[in-house]
Image (cartoon, rainbow, N blue to C red; front, side, top):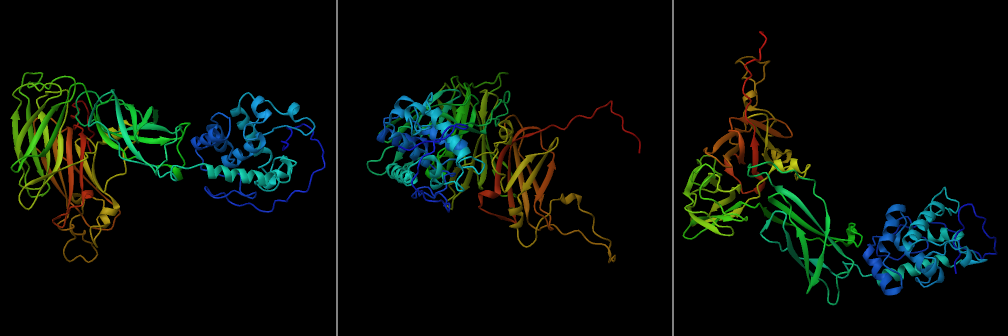
Length: 584
């Protein structure tokens, strides 16, 4: 049996040793490829804990220790595959007396004159793995260590770790046998389908979601595989009603799973804040850590609306005979009232905000609720289709529900004059700020809240560069200097505006009276990397805002050139009558 090193400061027994090979080189470790006596031990194995646990269960009487080996790799940098190979050789695959009685997997301090008496007793297998991994790293794999053999390899460690000159070759052989017995998720051809989630889920309610998985014939999911869930807010401040919720940054939490007929069942708890959320499920290692990137099948995320106890869900779809159909669903526990708190009638109102900058906004229809909508029930309304391709907004007027988010859809008109309805994901910058910066990368074109009473349209440098040979500048056209006087050769004239290129911005209040507003912001010319156009005159409050690039008078079909979002416009502060302004 190999003899482990003496503890620091303890005299070592001098024995006659057979000649050992001298290390002369180090070879980089490559996951999935054979280990040799010259392989770099200070490397990442790409072994998950669950795979080590499966190997131990199949080949040894040891308990699951995969997490301990993987942790040792993370903490001390020693390749878990070679560390496991050392443990298997020194413990007889977990069957030796030292392994069974002293929980000593590495023959640590098992001196030749009395291995059992001198071998260290550890309180647990996990403690043994941690202690010995650190000792090997400090003493054998570090240039400052007392047993450093010039290279971080099995052959170099063999110089002082064991009397057997073939020790390094045996470890390499075992490490390769381990690799052959472990079947990764990729080798099993494991793949997951998209999440199957409820369309609506009550705030804070636990629900069952599922995801199907496939693999090659006879392959199974590892029993030690865990799954974690993460909820990311997409839009929770979109209605502007009531206090804005306090949100924490998205975090992963492991969830219970069942597996029947290649379908994973997971129990998840919905967030307590109503709104649109992105739910992600991620396969995790048996210790809850992230799986190696080389063996980490992904599960497509899903959008899920979490509803409050008295929330109304609005939607717009294609109806019969070329009409649109709007619905109001009482999705919460209470009914949607046909009268507001002040006794006024609650009405459904639908607006068409055309993409064509020359077309005016049109009120498609308005209808009062004739009766309360009981919980779980739906009221349906028919609306005429717009004459132009438009962003259609359906809103509930009069406060019949504590929360009623307007429905927003992109409605195009086909060659036969029939409407085609497509959903739009409405950006909610307020949510990103509440959640500590979860906002995704800025769009090519977007609108942001400026100072009091103002908004600002932004264009990315890439979009600016795509406008053609003339590049635009980040400047307000109104601030351009006047033309130079005629006949003055030393003066320079300002560049002319980029003819036909405009950013069209329309806004509509989320609730309450008020017709849509429309602005056309001319794009100036000149060399620059980006563009910001500020504009005011927008009524305060939470508003639906959409911006569209009208390039040279042509409406493009590129979705990157249409931005829709919920923006809170700040009121212009009233002048302070007590404030005195110094005379010039």
